Amino acid sequence: MKLTPLDIKKQRFALKMRGFDPTEVESFLEMVANEYETILNERNRQSEEVIKLKTQLRDYQQVEKTLQETLMNAQETVNQSLENSKREAQIILRESELKAEKILDEARERLDKMKNELAIIRAQKESFAKRLKHLLQSQIDLINVLEMDDVGYEKSSDAKAKAS
Image (cartoon, rainbow, N blue to C red):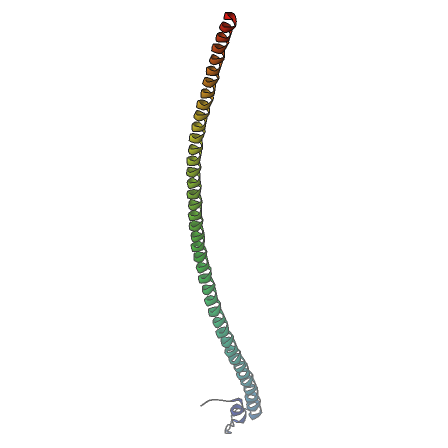
């Protein structure tokens, strides 16, 4: 049987000879009932507070769980971003290396072409110089021949002039 403050207040005892003073008993029961009521009210208030605190705790635990999940997701996102950045950097680096290699190949090809053109120009210069030397030599030879003819003509003219 559950005892309430009202039960304590309404409790009546049978009267007997040489028993307790009814006024004292009633006043004590009134005091016990009031104290019991205060204790019950305090217990109810504390129960409500416990329920409220348990609810808050559950809410905080849910928030904590959500924050942990968010933190894990953020960490995964950061890790994925780092991986993607590394891959992207490797791709850019490889593309740059390929472009640099292509530029070097093109430069080597142009250098080889220029060397070939230079060799052709040198050969043409040498050929032109030889032909020019040959032409000049033949002109000098022609001049020498002409001078000889002039010397031979002068001697024959001098000889004719002396003979005449």
